[in-house]
Length: 162
Image (tube, rainbow, N blue to C red; front, top):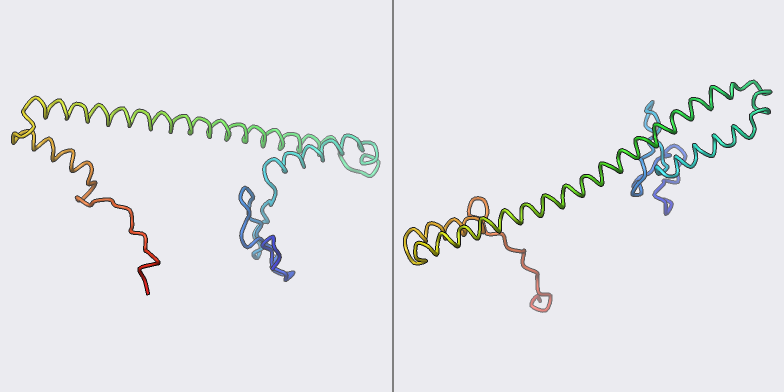
């Protein structure tokens, strides 16, 4: 097996472990092969093909290629890919902003609830039965569902083992 993750056999022409950011190229029966280029590589490749088609337009036309049709189809595909990528990047940015907003509002809501609970316990005397009900509410919150305490797993001490 090569360092790239490809097998040495000619009939197994696919990536075993795809690199991050790349699509998996499959060669299974009649399935269509998928791209192995990143989005940036694909856009650059398509733009280079367009540039070459324009540069060699006369030679390609003499050879019987309908250059205008090929250029038109490739230009449309490239613009659609660029638009989809721009939308994806916009959604990523929106998601990051929404995550930051959610984290901030959750922290604010917990802080407000905790303060309200502290005020309620203080107003009924911290040692009263009513205050104990409030204290149990905070304990249940810390314990989590089913009263299970979430503790980190113990780290084994290698010096203590034989």
